[in-house]
Length: 459
Image (cartoon, rainbow, N blue to C red; front, top):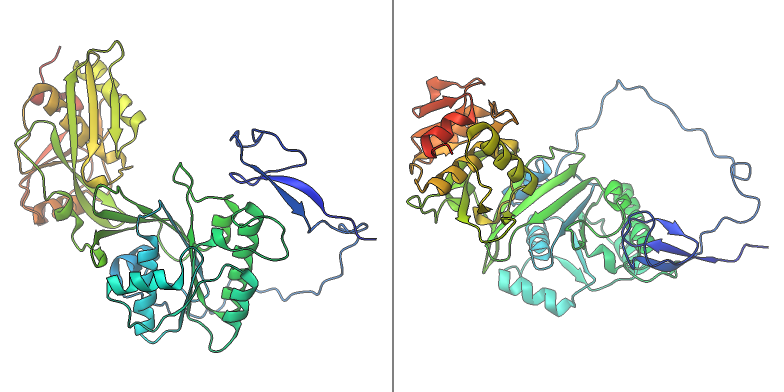
């Protein structure tokens, strides 16, 4: 007799399974995330390793041998092709996450229309919007005439049956994976078991038929894709849309890519006609810069293989609080705390009686350690009231001793600054630079104290 289905409680944040409900997940320590799900897949009695059916032997191959080169599908969107490594690989699964309203559906509709116009068969399933709503967006973007097959469906069985009919689709778009549900599971749509089952079934179809699969994933309040990490492990590529709704810029960043690099970014601008590619993001991020105000420094950074110049703004003001305020936007708060400690201990410049605010202009998030020197220059400029030269850029990592360490791709950074009209650069003393290709005036400093002596008097 078959074993009856038993109820289990699955955490919707980490995927941990429990036999009893509790208010707090013992695995990830999140509150009110356990949802009851029926374990319909429970193994019948007598199964286990001894009860498994005997499988067939598979052919083993060596590492050497010829492999067939896969022809990618160019999306027609240069910034997206840059992030994916040259286009979408047929048979691969791509997951896109981002906050609501950031532009995920807009980007996928533009990709679908571009590939459809190029002669590929594209099928677009919308689980959150009706067909009429998707058509309205297509009309607003000027894509209503694109040959894209559209349906509003959330039943996984109906979607797979539709995809199996007619000509094999070259691209399948699912918006979003959290809305799908399988009849075999009694859990509600969006739960861990439903998301895992839908993702696995769609990836199996894509691998067997050679169709590219693009999925939209909801994000949590921390900005991570909702559901357990197993969903991200199942797909081939994971992309995140970053940006601030107060700014028109959008950053598409790869955090996983089995067919390309994971350090590339794509830059878009949200306009009335959809997402517009930004060929030269440095000019865009520096467009509204006020170089006459103290506390503004230009950082010459690298995102993947792309040099990127961005403004770092700092404001140091006397504090009326017992504990001065520290606020950071677009940078690591712990890195700012370390930098303030180095300026105090190694350079004699104290911020203990001041509120400190640091902002990366344009809504960009910087994780590169080479931004330390530019942030320090902005802080020193603000506390001294001395504006930095308009045509000056900074980059370099600062150690706890105050030494300025070399950064990667130094010549590439300087060439980008030179192309945008900058004439002076402050950079680490260590590291190789091809000065024959540069006309900039280079000031190489070994220690942060030299910059502090120029901009702020020692206490």
